[in-house]
Amino acid sequence: MAINAQEISALIKQQIENFQPNFDVTEIGVVTYIGDGIARAHGLDNAMSGELLIFENGSYGMAQNLESTDVGIIILGDFTDIREGDTIRRTGKIMEVPVGDALIGRVVDPLGRPVDGLGEIKTDKTRPVETPAPGVMQRKSVSEPLQTGLKAIDALVPIGRGQRELIIGDRQTGKTSIAIDAILNQKGQDMICIYVAIGQKESTVRTQVETLRQYGALDYTIVVTASASQPSPLLFLAPYAGVAMAEEFMYSGKHVLIVYDDLSKQAVAYRELSLLLRRPPGREAFPGDVFYLHSRLLERSAKVSDELGGGSITALPFIETQAGDISAYIATNVISITDGQIFLSDSLFNGGVRPAIDAGSSVSRVGGSAQIKAMKKVAGTLRIDLASYRELEAFTKFGSDLDAATQAKLNRGRRTVEVLKQPVHEPLPVEKQVVILYALTHGFLDSVPVDDILHFQAELFDYFDAHHEDLYEIIRTTKDLPEEAVLDAAITEFINQSSFK
Image 1 (cartoon, rainbow, N blue to C red):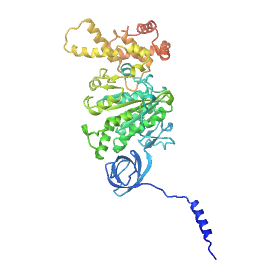
Image 2 (image 1 turned 180 degrees about the horizontal axis):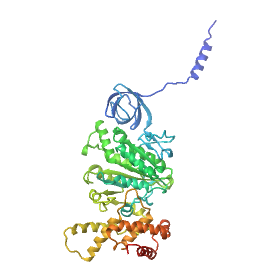
Image 3 (image 1 turned 180 degrees about the vertical axis):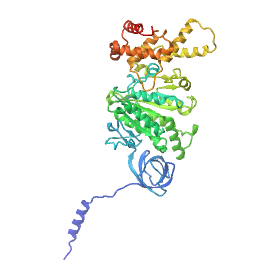
Image 4 (image 1 turned 45 degrees about the horizontal axis):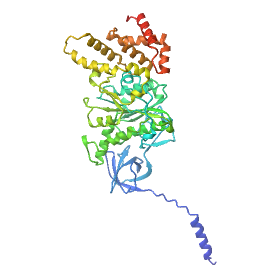
């Protein structure tokens, strides 16, 4: 049988035309060093910064240091069974986390995996953990109040939607309680809350989750936890994962409150990573880019323009100080990035003033513009009153005779401190706050004994609930005070029928 050359070449041509290359081009490297949650790998020449890499055993890593000879990788998860000489492959993806409504009410780790035992989270949406913050023209100024339900905050250091308000103080001064109360107060306010626990004890996180569940706040809250036993890469990632989940809601026009509890522990985890990756240490052994670590995180909280949906992320970052030193490195860094700080004092806390907010050291740089008119009117002089009271209080220690004006100031100051006290997990709606602060600033409490102030307040609220609901309604709807004569008459009417006459 003769072989026809033309037929053969036609057949080969056909084969070439229909040829589908099916080889997989992946860049594979080799692990050259492993230890303490850090790996180094050789052969990943084209890896990107922040790229997700996968090890032979299925663990994930994230490229951090891109050097001329190798890549420094932080390992996300278990690193005990990774060995030198194992292969590692690029994924071509930047680190991302699942986002969307399916996460609400769940407790997840920084990679978005559920840790609450309630089964998997069904969502197909993801967002990268690192994204650029909205620019100047994509933002709006802060104008809507975010009510925390705490008189001492809403009156003295108000917070607006889209603000970043630092909560700073020593350990055990009630920082977490303030944040949890602020989350509880968002019930019915069309707010989604995200609580990021960084380096907390698992038992503490469990307690907070149970508190949120008990008060029905878990229906609008996501808890992201990286507990103290987790490797430091997860502690470093947790806040970024939290804000990526928040951005999903913000860009769809919703309002989010995010709490970072606390960023001091994140900075320590980042320091550990950096030193293990052999980055040069700076002040207090932190790496040089520790400022950038927090600034690129907190800048992502904003109130975005109407073109982008008009949503907002309000951030409450925490910093733990040592012996009230707010001039420490991380503390001053974060103070300069945020729009104000709420300073919690150890001495006030131990003296029974709870929340232990030191009005003199606390400030809100934008909140005043987000206060409702009624609150502005009643809280206008409070801060000055408190400051002058604290000053005079120091003098009274000398036991000298005081004139009538000073006595009056001291009396008013003591009552102000008493009114601003509030039990934990009992946030107050703004209209009730306005009523009691009005009674205080207009001298209705001057004759009430200091020890009876909170009792007076409880009875006043009950009386108004029963007889003057309309006054509450006026404050709620108009955001302004009712006519002073009407309000004065209602408070006088209550005093006349009460035991405080």
